Image 1: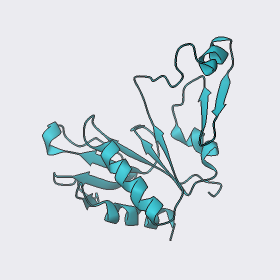
Image 2 (image 1 turned 180 degrees about the horizontal axis):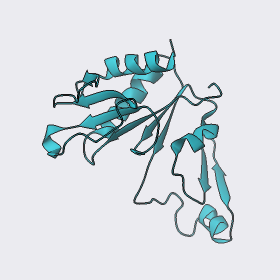
Image 3 (image 1 turned 120 degrees about the vertical axis):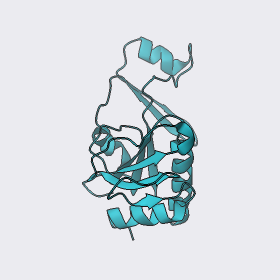
Image 4 (image 1 turned 45 degrees about the vertical axis):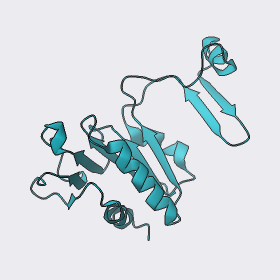
Length: 165
């Protein structure tokens, strides 16, 4: 990955299909030979280490960062918050593109997902930040419209935007 992180946010209302879209994009980009990272903005919080586990005990003792290393994966837990996902770019130096779920207010380029069944209007995004509008609704003026199942075309859009080809 170059000095400037190739990060894109997938944003939309809850239950709009963001995770399903991200799964499709990850699979498609991986099949094209790219290394892909993801970030999930869990605004309600989450817990990765089980109560009583060694990692939880390390954190309870005051460790600021805890890493668990196994034969097939590495996990890191850090205290604190992140308001700007670009601050996470350093953790993804080994990937070609990072897909961020959430962080509507960030300055990242965005793919907005909006579904008629949600009954909610599109987000009020900065048009210069909206890379694509994925929906079964009419696209806002100036937005590049995509259907909910048009993963290949969205992957093409990401490749063009970041000059990955």
